[in-house]
Length: 231
Length: 370
Image (tube, rainbow over all chains, first blue to last red; front, side, top):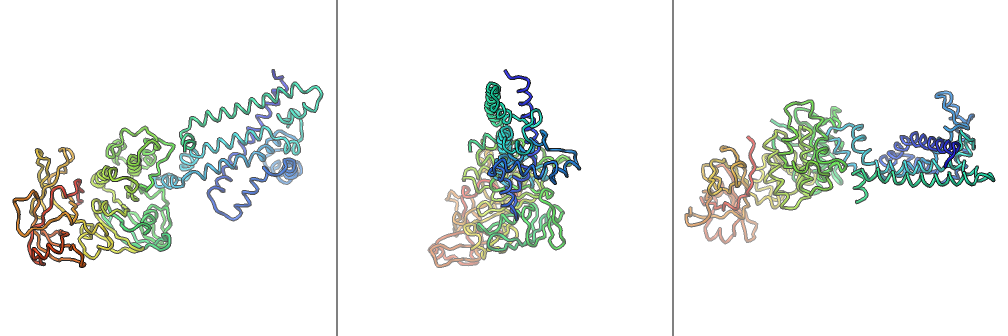
């Protein structure tokens, strides 16, 4: 079975990935909305920037985070001064790295699901007296839900498995920034770590399969998803 | 009094639609060929499209006046919009779809109730179903119920019957007639099917190439000989107004008074669907179903024989001509062959008998508004 140290690693990884998704989701939805619905100057640029973490070497992304959000980086300084939030060599930094790396995977399915919604439905809601907020909550979000769910699953998986950007940005500190992937890597480097590494690897596989099954189950309970599948 | 006043210029595809008209209660039909900007006109009234210039008023409220900078947002306009493609929310069942606009109802007691609207459109049994399981006609009825439930001050219907086959149209039409007689909401009805319009319209707005060719009382426009080109097949329709007097239950026949003459119509099959005696009904008959006789005939199966004075004989050199005559104050048109005109010696000023088979009248009738 898993030891206390291994459980702590798993708990940290889940905390990092969950925080990353919770923080990234609102931004991802806004960007997906802008890309799906608006035609504006700089739309191509926004799309490119959003996709960048997917194609850039993770180490480069990690380095960029270090420069911008590190202890001496401009954004790092600004956030510390205004909100007290610090990233350097902390789990919050691991969460930021995971969020940035997972962002493109979060945006894409949400954008596709928003594009698939018939704008006519929103017009119909308007004529029925619904405000923008009510249309968002009662029409757009329920219909986009399959895409949002898919985005969260993909982004969460990416966040859990993130390696390169995390290790570059916040290093590999047990108890602070050593998530699953970093721990497995460290254990494999150690002559006595094989058994522990295998247990964590087994857990990762179990977690991945579990997440997919859970999302399938949630999806099967949604009428709009059923329809999207059949159609 | 005008319930609805529209004066609008709006870009519709290649050209600009300019239209100005007024209408009272009941159904105002916008008729024109496809692509004439009819849907754009409805969208502008609903506030979904910003017109280049417009003044739109209904229910005692100006919702758009570009000169004065008035523009009421779409969700505050209190329109009931029945879209051509229904636009039911796919993730809600029928009940939730219908109730979606009902929040607007809450503050206003005495407005149409849910059950009443559901019953009027005959969708009680569908209430828990999802839209994807409904047939085209059912979807349309749900869409109409949803629009009505939002307590609209005007009902906008964009080709509500266009996507349906003939049998379904025939089944939905009575519901539209019911809405018209049971609510006092003005209805703006876009269509390119002249049959629907001949049956339903109180006011008719004829649009061609982005301009209003004629607008006004539908019966009067159908009677005009100069609009034949715009009315197309509809030019062959004769619209008559008659007062319901008596129901012969044994034979399921209705007796109506048309300018002092009795006309017989097929009954509705049961007493419940009868209008009240004294109600004015619109009858539609095709001019080619009207035969002419020089004398009244008692040896024919045709029950309806109306003496009419010939006003005009219109022919274009082809085999058939249109004879326009007056019964009392109403126009009757008969399409007969040129040969018949010669053989019977028909001329303007002659009195002849218009023979109309009971079965030629369109079976369902529109109640005229006063």
